[in-house]
Length: 147
Image (cartoon, rainbow, N blue to C red; front, side, top):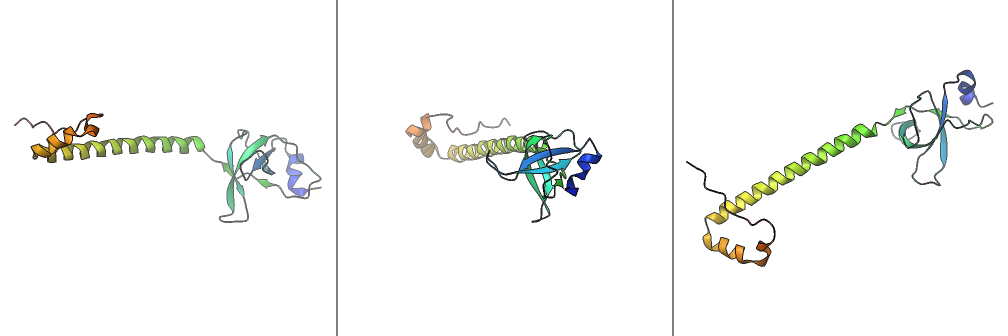
């Protein structure tokens, strides 16, 4: 008997989960053990490994699999679940913030160019005469501030 699977005979709560280290439908599947009832297909979970920091991430492809008690392979426990939802939300917020910063930088550069051109009427007139200046928002000098 495979002693790393004895827990399946001791506790009805343990689950066998199949996961892959590589992407693709043909990727080899590796079985892991867990008590976590919430793990589902397509989750990313942390598992022990013999490389790097002794842990890596795999993708769950099947839950509640049937363990092979005659197998000679040791089955490891799942360390935890990767919280991708929180990670993706942080990335979304960062992308939105970066877009706001870029927009403000573009606006500032346009205002600076407009202010520089305001002191050179001839250059402003020549710039406005260029065909590319007739597309989109024209560059205008800033309105004089009321004093």
